Length: 130
Image (cartoon, helix red, strand yellow):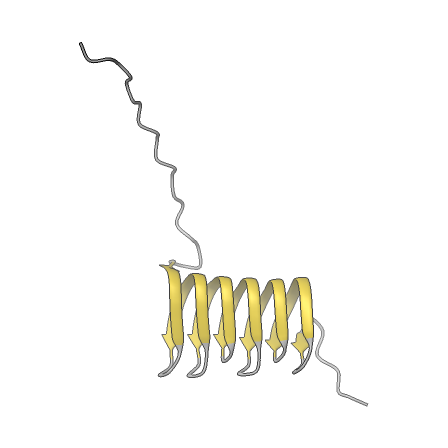
């Protein structure tokens, strides 16, 4: 009989493909493939793992591949074989030699994205030349 995961954890094993929205209160370890949205306290993507979609966690560690939208409210660690691309938001970043990060990158303070105000549209006067 296989050992069970502690309550509040998710393990996506090698060769497993999941599609959908996942909310994990604790640790999510991805050794397989996920497409969709995953929210957890901690997400660890192994060298075999891949996630495509919206990933949100306090702590994100990437040894495999992560694409689309990533929000690491506290720490983002990219291992030497890890690659991240897309829209990336983080508070604290560590990239090990060989790791790759590309896309729209935003550093936040204290795990909170800055609030942007939409610029007011300029009034354009229409007229005719005489």
